[in-house]
Image (cartoon, rainbow over all chains, first blue to last red; front, top):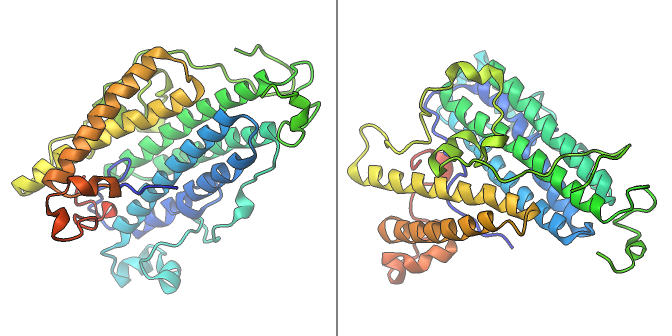
Length: 205
Length: 152
């Protein structure tokens, strides 16, 4: 169960319409390393995690990613809500406008729709946590790239906030991996699949 | 803590260290000074005050809106402090300092949200009971939508 809280985790107040910027940051909504992808990845992986605390962490980070998705959507919305047709044409936002007007739709910067193919839920705790570490780094790189291109401080501040969150989440997933390793034989972490072969823990989970 | 082993990723467990204040933490994106690792391309504008996450309110806004924004900013700061502490506690469940701080800030946060519902509008379903007009009309949809940027 989730409870909605009627505020953004980090406030967004953008006063200047800029469809070009909207088209770039929409990638963090529906792109390959976006917040929707991140959220669905963690919220899908958690069910079969052998260590309860790791499943709990995936729930909490997956939930925070939903809040990040809302921040990105608020930014895209505010960057385009007063859009004129002229602005849409000159900024190259016209193709998006034809299909969605100024509504929000999850897609990558290059126009590819959001897809679950972007993330994995593999059913092996080491594999999934290693994917999660990589996912946080990929998202950080996207924020780095956005911060190189975008100059408006009203847009940069939320992006900087979100970038730092990727680093914090990386640290937490690293700690979750250490917790998982602690339950395994360090001579061979790969002797069995900790998510599937649970009887190999002999009740020690 | 695990030692290093071949053929698997290794991330050291974070040790408790210096914290930011709730105001600083929301601006930095973390409560933990050790985890604040800014990108060089953002350094040139560092040192300037964040135009958004401060409590000065909007220029030209009504008194009520200013009060509301001030309280909302406090809620954002305390809530984020708790968000970051939650993740820390998920992997450090016995850390006494973190636990104590979590309880203190949780109480503070609950009190602020109650005040916000009493003065302005409820932020969650659970806040509806603190709402003044609770018996004459449903207040859950009162106030601006969060993505409008009207109440930061």
